[in-house]
Image 1 (tube, helix red, strand yellow):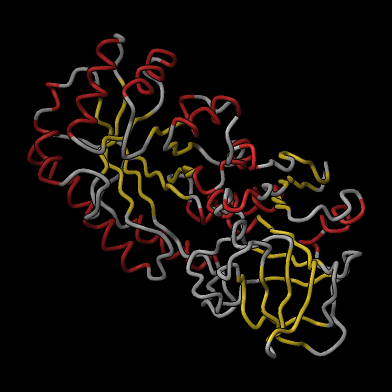
Image 2 (cartoon, one colour):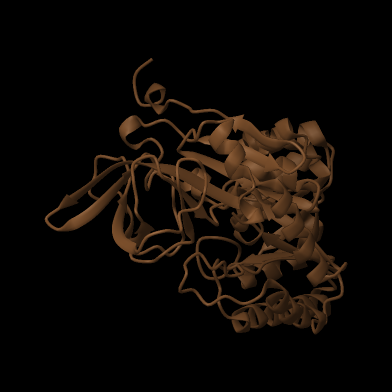
Length: 400
């Protein structure tokens, strides 16, 4: 068993393989984020988009500079976890006035807020003035969807910035999507933002201090995905950053890229059958817990290891192709078709890798009122730590 699976024996013996469960390897997460930071250099600050996995908010405090927070619930998680307001970028396409008022009245002028519209700008200004504060903001540049502000409107905001005494416009924010396989798109976007900031300085005397950019780096979820060494990708990306005329602070907003590799989803075989010559394995988990970006008709092969019930890897026997299905009462609950297994049997354990981002929150968890999986943290020092036990969703799907 490879060192990355050190948690398995403890999970099997101490937790008696309480599947389905997630395990997040905090040691590997922190090591990976530190490597990303090292590759990008001191000029770049990392901002963790906590929507990727809110459970990692606390552990991420040791290795990132700031957190992108997009909802009142995410903000409350930050409060409970102890994230200082100074390290929060309060984002989101809709900001409830009551929530904004609470944050400003409670934390004063700390933190950074994003502006997604003229209404956002007016709201933030009015709330800050009312509280006798001046808050820092970033204007989000639209990429052509419902998010952000059109560049024509941004020019107007910048030229009229003195009319908003409650806000200090620090710079721009931009994000256009995830799982980008080509650095050429990132280069084009960054060069455009660089030129836009230069224009704003020349025409309106605006000197941007911060450029927050979401690169959307590609995460290879499936075995057929093209894999490039992280160091190679980041070295090329750093060259793009170094060529920018903008010399202020660069903040890279990332979620999936920082969190994906540290997560494991562990589920057990509970039944096996052959129907009309098609072999099926039934798992105690399913598509309500496991969600890979880009999965199509269960045809792509994720990284997954088959273990015996004692936690040892199964290596004997010829590979046989089985359809892996979950426990939901729907024909859609097919995780992978024709997945290679070696002498599968009931109580075997399947460990799906690279599920540190989104699976823990994106699944259709309330469907059929099945319990939410357990969630564990693992470190070499402290071993497995249960951070959330099963949650019975039937309590949410019925009258009180």
